[in-house]
Image 1 (cartoon, helix red, strand yellow):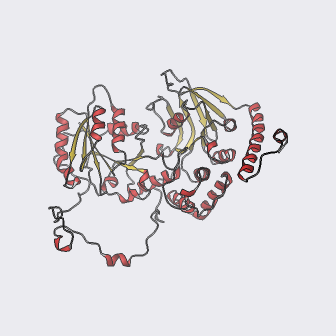
Image 2 (cartoon, rainbow, N blue to C red):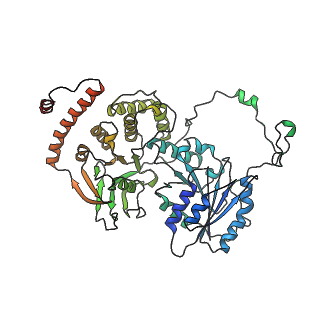
Image 3 (cartoon, one colour):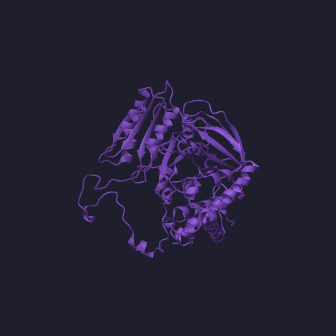
Length: 508
């Protein structure tokens, strides 16, 4: 039987990730089991049973959950062997972040939530620092730069671990994780095996039931804070910071020459007859009715689909120094900032994680270009959480162009962002990116080198933008400029009571 340990902070998405991985591993003959360790109660066993997974629950109650875990894990493995399981997974939450559930010669996975804050990886103990694989969840909710900074912090805490990104809701990334689990070693029992790190040590009066607070009632293994030492320490640094000495562990950038989309099937299961290769410097626009599958194509590209997504598509890449964890930057419609820092601090943090030393120059450059793209300018000392939607998107486009290590950029409906669309695409292409844009905007659609037409969840055709369309694009841009002037007039409090027909006939 294969045995794998899963750990991570509470609510990081461990159960969802495990279920998606089991979906990828399922076959008619396979039998899976999970031992869920918790403190007081759990409802995850209901989810496992619903998925047809053999589940055991261990609740530590008033005992230390870590010690409860290690006292029972060998019996759990023996139980799994008796049940004839092909794979047993132990799931435990490191409530105090000092958890040490990983065992030598047993595949160890740590799941961590990117919404928990960029400093969290350095706050977590052995369950992250001694893991073989670190799974990052909820990365689709935060900004691209924050994803890269968070990944850097994970690498700093555990340079040897393999880092994977898994979406517990859609299952993206679960297939790659399942491949690693397939390679896990077989075990019969854990007798004589050793933990990778010691368990937390505690044997004090409170362990034995004492409830009264006060030094007279504190006996056994206790630890006191040295307040004199705290007073002597220098003033605290910002809660969001990277050490000046932090270096990128991998300095070799990814080089992509092309990306190829191999068709899967539409929503009815009919074959998607497409093989499309896109080269560096191209802008590909994706168009189609709402709900047709435009965002799904972007998601397939983001996770480098291997036939493991609902569409069955395969995405292939051609290049050098390829690292699937950093190929794609996504600028989504629901991008959020979770760090409470200024624009300048945000850029400097991202730049440090990329080992950029000229922090002042890169900060000024990104803010300059972001303000050229945004409808309304902003300064570098503004908190990023106070930026408007358009300003946020403009900042992320400039940041992605100059700092992101990802050679492929996915943009979902940039026309809704309030940014200069043409200049945004020009900037990204100039910096050597392959750009995919999902759009309903005819101007954006004609700005691309090609446009992919999506119907019923599949690519129905690919159109190369021709000379006549380029000529029409110039006319459409003139009309768009007129509309932009109207919007600015309304924002300035002016009346729109002039001769509209004559206005649109006039040259700019």
